[in-house]
Amino acid sequence: MPGTLVVGSQWGDEGKGKVIDVLCAKSHLVVRYQGGPNAGHTLVVDGKKTVLHLIPSGILHNHIQCLIANGVVVDPFTIHQEIQGLKNNGYLMDNRQLRISDHCTMILPYHRALDAAREEAKGKLKIGTTGKGVGPAYEDRAARKALVFKDLFSRNLKEKIEIAIAEKNVLLKHYGKAEQNATEIYNQLQEIIPQLEPFRVADTSLLIHEAQEAKKNILFEGAQGTMLDILHGTYPYVTSSNTIAGSCFTGSGIGPKSVDKVIAITKAYATRVGSGPFPTELEDETGEFLQKEGNEFGSTTGRARRCGWLDLVALRYSYRVNGVSETAMMKLDCLSKLENIGICTSYRYKGIELKDFPSDLEILENLEPVYEYLPGWQEDIGGVKRFSDLPENCKRYIQRIEEETATPVRFVSVGPGREQSFNKTKSRS
Image 1 (tube, rainbow, N blue to C red):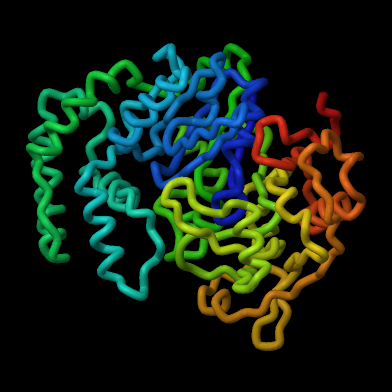
Image 2: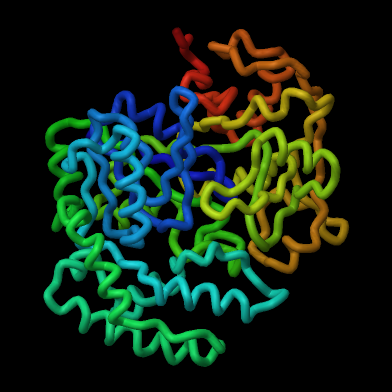
C-alpha cells in the first residue's frame, strides 16, 4: 500500500511534528529517513510538551511502530536521552515500538567538536550550524570511514574509534582545540549501549516492505525544510542532507511507487534560523510580533528565529521540487491580531521582475520582495473546528495561497495543541 510523505516546504520549523502526530491516528508505521539531531519536532499533547530530535513523532501513539532508517545520522547519546525521557513519561513501554537501522551513521563527540571548531573559525562567515556534528558525520559516510549503529555492538568498537579519531584530532589541533580521547568516548558508550541494543534491527527497508505487503498505512517523516536541502537549497547556508521528498526513497530503501501522497508542511508566515538569504525577513516590529506570537525559538538550539511574510516564490519552487500533493497550513492563529498581512508574490532585481526562485546566491541577497497585502481577521481562531467557521478574511488568505501554489490546503492548524487542527474538507468533532 503506497504511503504518505510529509516534507517541510520552507526553511524548517514549519510544524511537521504536529501534523505527523495527527496523521499517526490512522498510521501503522512511521519512518524517519534523513537528517539528525539538528532537527527538533515539538509536540503538545494534553498540555504537555514533548521535544524529539531523532525519534519519529509517532512514538506518542502506542499502536505505532517507529523506524529510524539508513539515511539518518544518529547520536547515540542523544537518542539514549530521548528513549529514557519517553519512558519516564509513560511512552515507549514496549521496545518493539522503536527500531533503529544497523546502517545508520553514528555521530560521536569528535564530530561535534569538529563541527563547533569549524564554525567558530569562520567568524563573520558562519553558516549557522547547530553544532550537533551532523555535517562531519555525513562527511565520514561519504568518505566510507564512518562508524555505523551496528559498530556499537562490535568487539572491535574501541579500535574503530581510535582509527576514526586520529584524523579528527589532527584537524582539532589545527583549530587550536583540545584533542578527543578515544578511551573516554568508548567508556561513555559502554554505559548506554545495553539500553540501545534492544532497538537495533538489521534492515529497516525489509520492515517497510513487509508492512507494505500487509497493506499497512505508512507515514514517512522528513526533517528540516526544502530550502535547506544540500543540493536544492540556498547553498552553502543549508543542512548536510537532502531534505526534499526524493530523499525518502534513498534514505528508507524503497522505490518511488511506495509513496502516493506528498504533504507540504507550510507555516502561514516564514521563518529561518541561522545565516543565509531570507528575502521576506522583517527586521521591524512586525517581525518581532511574529516571533513572539509564534514562540519562534528553536527546539534544538533555543536560538531566535528570523521572521517574515510568507514567500510564495520560494514556496512555488519548493512545491515543484517536492511534487507536492496538498498543503498543511500551520500557525494560522499567529496572524490573527494583524490588520494587514503581506505575501510575497514575486521578486524584483535590478528592475526586472522574477517569478521564479533564483539559484544565484548573489541575486537572492540583493533582490527586493514584491508584496501583496491582504486584510487580516483580528479575531481569535484557536477554537475553530471547521473551515466554514473561519473568518472570511482568513479563508481568503488560505484560498490565495492555494491559487498561487496550485495546490489544495487540506489540513489547517489554529493552535499548538493536538486538538487545535482540522481537515479543511471535513468537520472535526
